Each structure stands twice: as structure tokens, then as C-alpha cells.
Image 1: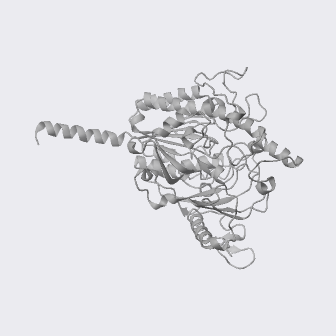
Image 2: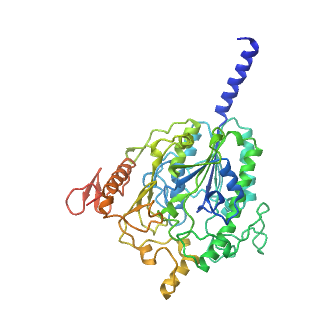
Image 3: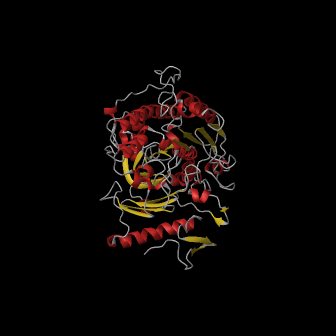
Length: 509
């Protein structure tokens, strides 16, 4: 090899090494964000920035949350473990006071031990702090959440600060941005039901967010999701939510622009999703598809052939931690929780960027216990592309209502119409919403709106038995202390019947 070719070879190798080392991650996690984007088929909303992100991403048609509640969902994103395993059973703040187990190994801690810089901006809503410790933190734990979670100009400043610091740091980085929109605001406040008046420049006394140019919608401008009643109250509620979507969308544009301006756009993996569904009945806190289903996008600078494409592979928020570790080539640490060896059951989503994703992308699991401390309604779910199995452990009780899912115009209108006997153009009834069967099995091909429970149908006996077995195995592997309920008691590693005859816990006739 002559000297010129040798020099070219050395330069090429150095470039490859630099490429391999210059890998970063940006996680964009919305709050109560659903599918109200052009990229997901909404024809009425204006979402140019999220749609632009979709154009440089692989868009998942089948994205799901691991739990339809704020703190629990965020804990799964950062631990890779379901809530029944990591201990974040419900909301972290105020009287709810839920925390993960002290020895849980979270993503920022794992990355920090591997010389990767970590930062969080916006909503954290997790504890204890020692478990979820980032190097750089600007969150609602110590700053006004309205400012660091909804004021996109303020957030842009901190994103720029973190990225500028990273330019002078040899370490790769993870930046997690917890955007507080689309979460509802304090009921009856001057900022509006969705804080839609906060900083809009149109409402006196609510300030101005310089980078936000609000989109204003009319009731006839919104699309009514199939799971909500088409009433004036719902349309007015959605108008306010749509306006907040414009702030969310423009924030996404700002943050992506900061990434580009700092010179990191070509070496940063971007993950975009939400913690749970929109804050409406049948969605948030529920594990029907409006609550379990999420927007989900992955933008990899090293997989540009996937940009602008869609996939039917199934992704979950439980997959984010293993995906990020895979990106950084960092192994998952060996440790135990409650005497059991911890193993992650999520998937490596980078493999979904290949032409033929492996079979593991054909199902997801979800696990919900509490939202607020008073809302005891454990659910365990297995969903495939065609079927969904839900186990409602506390099925004898009425389905509990989170504060923001009760005190809102849509649900109060449902209550008033039900009480007065007025027409209610809703997919279900209040009675069916409150009282659910212990087991629910839905064929999502013939029944995408989850209306016909197939439990007891002989035609689906084998399907249900297979799904129950898979769900039971997952719960055992992940150490679910609720796995024997409601018919049995967990004793050691076995389920003992409450009626003095041993069974597996998952009774199936």
C-alpha cells in the first residue's frame, strides 16, 4: 500500500472511530399525549414540527405505554422494569408518595457509571432522587413546572445550556426532556383547563411565551376520537387541548433546532413518545387502546433509510432503556430486587430498524396498579397485533376516577346526561365504564374499539389459554407480588387458593 492510500485508510478508520464514539440520545417524552398529529392521521390539527420529526424517523403504528399513569410510566422508561417490579406503584407527589425501591438501577445512574453525561429538563415526577439522579437537572422538583415544563422559551434556554456544556465535554450524553403539555391544568383556574391560556399573549395576566404562536381552533375544527361522545362539551374540551398541542409541537421544533445548532443532529438518536393517553375517559389510566396506545418514533442518524417510513412492529415504553443501552453499547447491570435477579424483558428497538424485525416485536405487556393512592385497580395486559387480554384484579370495585379525569367538561357532561336521561352519543355507558369483567378478551381485527368481550367463547378458548400462559410467565419472571390475585394468595413462589385447593393463580375454566 502506498503512503497516500495508507494515509487515506488511517483517516477513514479515525472517522469510523469518531462516529462510533460520538453517539448521543435525546428522549422527548410528552405528558398525556395521544395521536392528535398529522403524522398519525389527524386531518384537522396543525403539527408541522412533530410531522417533520416523523419525516426523519421510523414511525411506529403500534406504540404502547407500559402503564397508563404518569409517575409509574416514567419509572418504566428509566428503569426498563414494570411498575410491579420497580416499586413505583403510583404517583410520586403529595399524599400519594410512591417511590421506586432504593436499589433500583435507573438509566441515568447506569449511564453515569459508564462515563456518559445525563440531563433532564421539565417533568421528572419520580423518586427517590438517589435512584433517578441526573448530572444536569432542571425539573419541577426544584423549579416552577409551568416554566420548565410548558414555557417552551424557558425550556429552550436550558436545552441550549445543556448542549453547549456538552460541546465542551468529551463524554456522549443522554438528554431527557419531560414536556408537561398536554396534561390538564388546575381545574377552574385562569390558565384554562389545559393551561392553554398560559403565555398565549391573548389572555391578560397569563404572560407571554415569545416562541409560542398559538393556533386557535373552533369546535367544528376538531376530530372526535371514536371513544369520546360527540357533544358540545367534548368539542369545547378538545378545542382547548388542540391549542396546547400547538405549544407542544412548536416546542419540539425548538428543541430539535437547538440539537442541530449545537452540531449534534448527525450523531444523536431521538426517541419520541408519551407516558399515557390523553386525559379523557377510556384513555388515561385505562389500558384499552386509547390509554395504552402511544405515538412512538425513533430517529437514528445511522439508519436514514428508515426515515419517513412506518412499521407495524410493536414498541413499548418498556423498550426505551434496553434500546438506549444498546445504542451506547452499555450492558445492563446485574443486581437483585426483593431477592430476585433482575432481568429486562423489554426489546432492543434498534433491531426494528432492520428490514425484517424479529418475532419479539409481535406483542407487548402492560401493568397498572394505582394512579392516585385512592385508586386501587390493578390490571395486567398482554396485547398482540390482533388480540388483547386484560386481567382486572379488583373487578368487583367500580373503576376509580383520577381528579383530572372527573373534574373536566367532557366527563361532567357524561355524568349530567346520564343522570338526566338525555341522549349520550358515547361508545359505552357509565355503568359499563365503572364495572368491568375480571377477564376481558378482544379481537382487535374484528372489534378494534374493544366492545365485545370474548371470554367464554369456545372459538377463543385456545387463544385465551395461550395468552394467559404467556402473561403468567411474564409476571413470574418480573416478580409480580399481585400475580396470584384475586383468587389466590402468594406464598413463597406459589399461589395457594383462598378456598384451600392449590391452583396456579390464573384460574381458567
